[in-house]
Image 1 (cartoon, one colour):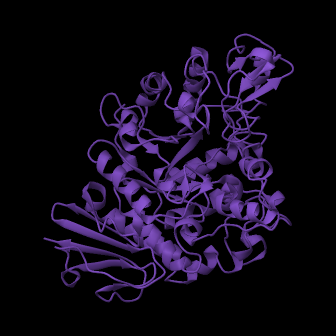
Image 2 (image 1 turned 30 degrees about the horizontal axis):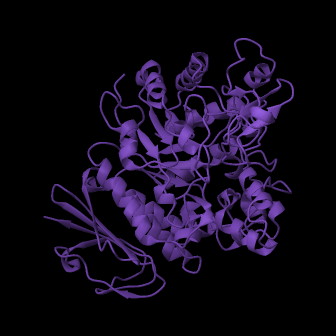
Image 3 (image 1 turned 120 degrees about the vertical axis):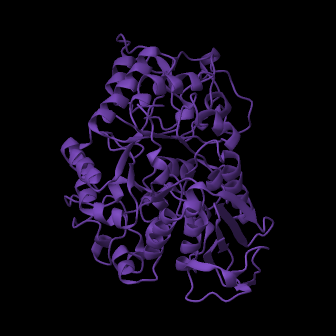
Length: 551
């Protein structure tokens, strides 16, 4: 089937189901809640939805430990609710993509339970190894979530590999039967009408043969299982046998990838394996690889990442644009300013929404939600967060470790969406929601922002509508100005005589500013701004403007 590239003109909204909206009032978000809020999502200008996992799961990693790939968790409303949401989304010309999690399953998945018993054909569905010499682990690889990457199973008498939590054993993708299972999953959802997949850590599915030790001082094993020896072979197989037969979209999550590496997966042409890549470079401007290794925020580092991906992919591959998702703390608390929440929230939106690519907006981002600050680390739910608190930086006092969690935890982005100033932020009518509501919900909520024409919410609506109306956003050349500035991000887009200039301040201080040569504000149309006026020659704290020229 011909792939039409429909995703290039869409803006997606990511839903973290258990925290979006509770439709049946049991305390947890669900698909009945999504159904009630489809018009809200559409009103943003978003015409696509990415669902984080909806499958049955014991919830060790909030649904990324899948126990059944071909069903919907009853807690979210089951298949009936999903089919209704899919139908109603399509009626509104909204696409729906699922999270595909096939590097690992839940340890409660029937495949794993049968593999423990060595029942054919499941014996080698997972990566099992006997103990090493003198009872040592099979190798020295680290888990990304919990200590070392091996867990001993008493029933089988061997160790299994888990790159994430102990409850997430890695599948053995070198087994052709496992790859056939993945194809069945793809076909099942595509036949149901789903429009594509976000593929979770998909570049981890091929491990180096022999599983050798890694000499890296930290994150041992990462270079042995990321972009492994058969990754392109396996992704090409999925593309050839299933995905090419549907007009669907695929976006691959890949930690530690550069734009040139990404082109091996997403370069457009007959060998293309994936449509878009979720990279982590633009999510690491205040840390070293992960938020638990914090660094001061660097606008120069963020701009360099933005520009690398824009320039290297131009004319060859398509960008996936994002600032927030379920795996990172809230972006205003990281890259912006909680003091200037409204201004910096708008400046951050302008900074990425006018680049070339398909933007994704994460639930709550559009109303400027901030990081959650619990008073006790045991209030966190996330397996990664709790492991870091209990096992890392234990030489620090409780207060300092808690401060690190405030800055780094994924749970900061997973608190219930703040719909109103009512009890539980209007998320649920149950007495107690599944997870703590941020204390600031009376000040920051969608209902309040709906009434304010100058809110972050209404800025997102204007910005998304604007990007869809301008050909230069989809097709235009990208150029960055003022590259060495640590306080301003300035870039242009140009296509067939239409020129855009995007100016974003990342400073709490007022600063002087002169437009680049060839861009005279006096001859331009000011399309978007986050202050009521736009004086020449200066920028106020976190000010942003979008200008347009026509030849």
